[in-house]
Image (cartoon, rainbow, N blue to C red; front, side, top):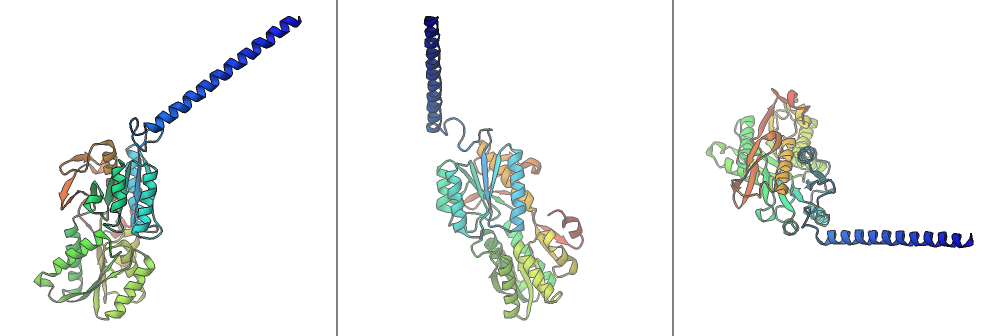
Length: 362
């Protein structure tokens, strides 16, 4: 009996030891596999791909609290997710290049697959974005471009020449072709704003504008309070001012409020680029007879589709390439200057005849 008990205990101990060895071998094999996976990352599944097989595509907008940027981010997220990928949305507290650079560095460390950025400065982001591309990350810009060396392609909301010229034409019609005008821009480094303003100045060279004078370009930095202060400063410095052109959604809404509060309807006219939801009251009151914009949701959506196409390898950003941008249909990459772009469409005019229809859309 005693001998049988000893045999049973010996057998139990042997089974236990064997099981432990098997478990240790399994753990060791798993650890070795994980190490091999880490060492070979990028050789198997693409960099940044999640366990579910989704690519991680990031968007950095100019700043928080900007309604245009928020709508653009909504469209971007929709497109990225329609493509089966994961969207990462970033917004700095202040519209500075330094804040965006920090976010780019963080995204590089996270090994995302693509970064799209609406730049606060065309050149300052170059070292960080070139580092991202060197690490295999696809880089594109939208709304406000970085220089051609800093991205693979830019998503352009509309022809910059048309945007600039049409705003001068609007001011001309509003003030009867005579008087002082001013521009209330975003930041002094915003590439899109500066390009539009250059085309405004080109338009003003036409002899038909001989009786119009551009007295100042002010910068509200896409901050509501500063845009209000800059508008008030323009009115104080130029008591004979006839029109303000604000090619920024934050600036035009701020200017609309100042002109309304001061009872200047019909004395100082307002036009530019604005969100229908924010500008409806000023268009309906006549403070801003009409303005222009494109759909920021579609702009973000097109950028999201382009990012999907870049990470899939459907396009590389070279002129002549075509891809399907979801609900927006086929789009082509075109050469513009030293870089390439994908165009959304022409600016759209909002006035009393259609603002009721659009103010609940965006």
